[in-house]
Length: 77
Image 1 (cartoon, rainbow, N blue to C red):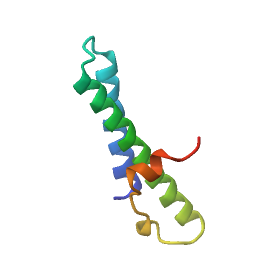
Image 2 (cartoon, rainbow, N blue to C red; image 1 turned 180 degrees about the vertical axis):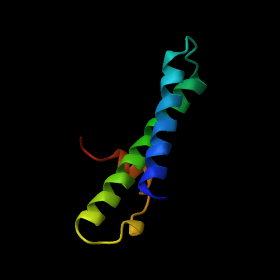
Image 3 (cartoon, one colour; image 1 turned 30 degrees about the vertical axis):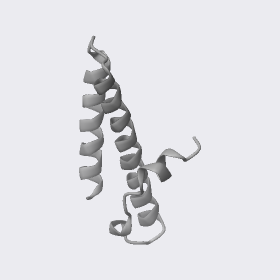
């Protein structure tokens, strides 16, 4: 995945998240999906940051890998 692919994925996930949040129906299924979207977004942003850092320091950005959800979700913000 290159940066454009990652950014397109982020935009797709954000659009879906906005649609779910704007809907009047917030079921358990909807809330679970929003949680999954948030985790997927965190992974995408992490991957994008990894790629940019590797490029900045002369490394191959294609060596960046998606980190497991528990690892990404435990980062302090």
